[in-house]
Image (tube, rainbow, N blue to C red; front, side):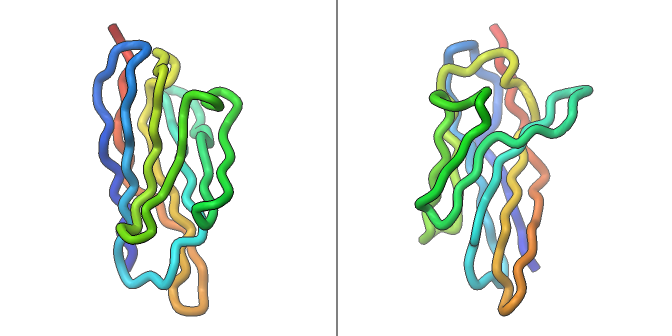
Length: 119
């Protein structure tokens, strides 16, 4: 069984920073890729950032230059550093991990962590 737990969300003023964590646990062989998504009230889920094998990263245009994704392989944890936050970044942030289980690969979602950017 695989568990994905996000943490680090909260209330922050515009211009502030937060670091989100996505911890992956369970009987996994490896983590292939991790994606962060966000969903604001009344809006569709939006892809935010991607990291593959610690070397390849990609970002949505809306967060490029402000957000940074990284991973600690020893802890099976992926981080999303969010700087220069704007009110429009307010959303529930969800982690999606593409993991290897034996000879198969599957994707799992966490429950999300809420981020509110407001003065």
